[in-house]
Image 1 (cartoon, rainbow, N blue to C red):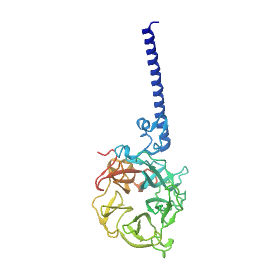
Image 2 (image 1 turned 120 degrees about the vertical axis):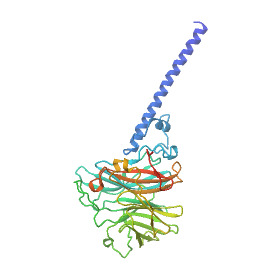
Image 3 (image 1 turned 180 degrees about the horizontal axis):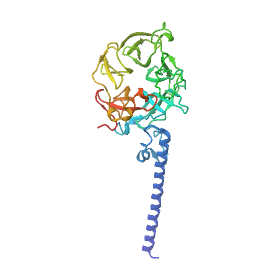
Image 4 (image 1 turned 135 degrees about the horizontal axis):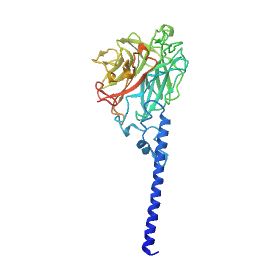
Length: 380
């Protein structure tokens, strides 16, 4: 063989070797992406999250077939709010309801607490305080129950989380419905519904529920009356306030979260949420439908703001029965967010009184720059 023949043979052999190497690399990358998809699906469970773990995202977080340390929860800075695919974070069905959201943001993670209502195979119905977590508002962990199965308590409706030193305190209600079943009858809590807190240092392990004696130490638990939907707030002077549903929105104040004094009330619906922003307090509350607003400068005297927040309810069959329970997080300083976030639940297509109370309730998300004009995934 002459020199040119030998050279051409070497070139062809090298090209063949390179084609083989490229094919192997393609196989590796494709397999890495497939592993990424499957791992992402396993990590995030149900809800709206599974289908959104697509191949390009997996290729971003997998390098040489190895999962990067930050891949389990992708950070919100990577995409902002524009990539949230569905207004619903958690989707209810004919055996499940997700209600009463409350949100806490810390160290790059959104901790979403809510009421989980489950209908069991024998048609027994139980409620729980549960939670999911996310770093990007798209991919959420599988729901985890924080309270036990107990129809005499049926802990539910988390109001919010507050910081007390190293502790995080979650407030919520009991909603006793002994013997509650899926038999066509909608049942509400009896007269023993009360308010409770749990403490945690890591937002995962929680203490046993403890009664909030909002009527003061002299009033026994039996004499406190039916009350639901607590919300805790610390004012500028360091005093604690508790808002709860009883005769409208009742208000109590404390210096230590232990000894409470009733200080007033205001006309309002359920699921009160109070946000301090721009030198004033804004209360969100839930009448029969929609989310109302009130404002105050001292937490005692409140003025109604016009209009109701109903978002895209007219177009959402899953919220046609009721849109309610708004919980607002000031996310203006959160990288990639820069807005107020509104978590809420919608039930439907039937009204709650018609049966979509313990079923077909979903938690959704919207956002705003000014607490008046709201957007959400897919809105035009």
